[in-house]
Image (cartoon, rainbow, N blue to C red; front, side, top):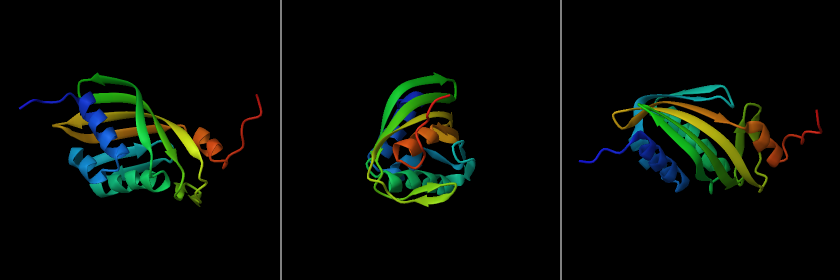
Length: 146
């Protein structure tokens, strides 16, 4: 049996997510995962919470596709930088509540640190440029200068 590297497993789950195969992603998620979204300050505990985290993005951006920019592996940790490209055709959950769909195409800049154990993600830290996302959607004004 061939064992995939943790970076290869990370690419696999991002590919499955892009295809909307969230149930298949869950095969790579530990029952007791702890996932932190630094954009919202939310911490998701367990598979059910993590599924809700993923579904939130797929609801707001059903066509979202992940394009990797860089990926690094060190032991059980993988650091990955990617763009999420999609169209906002569903409500987007924000700390202020649900924002209605805008129909706009966006590029979401993301970095993640995933900790793997026995082929499953046990911890995930998600960092995303929410300010830029909200500006692309017209929900936040463009910066006017320093």
